[in-house]
Image 1: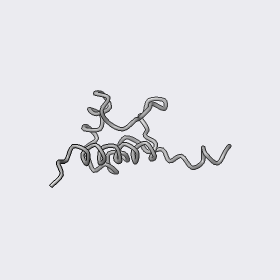
Image 2: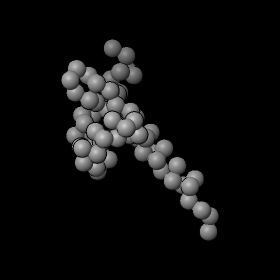
Image 3: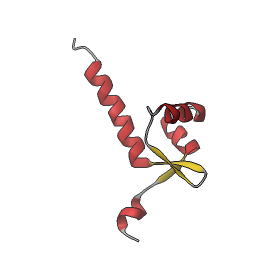
Image 4: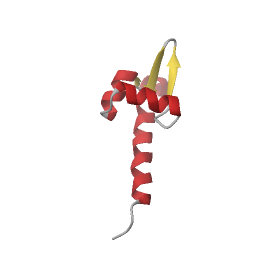
Length: 71
């Protein structure tokens, strides 16, 4: 196994919702609409890579910063 694979932190749906401080149902809805962080099925369960969550959070932050008018 390579070092890259060992460093990947997989989160369950509930764990990802906890990181985002949002209800599980909201994260499911975002996944259904294709507007949330990238997730994937592993067997019957949906998982999220921690780095994908962090990237999505940063994208949301920068998108809001761009939309914010200057004072």
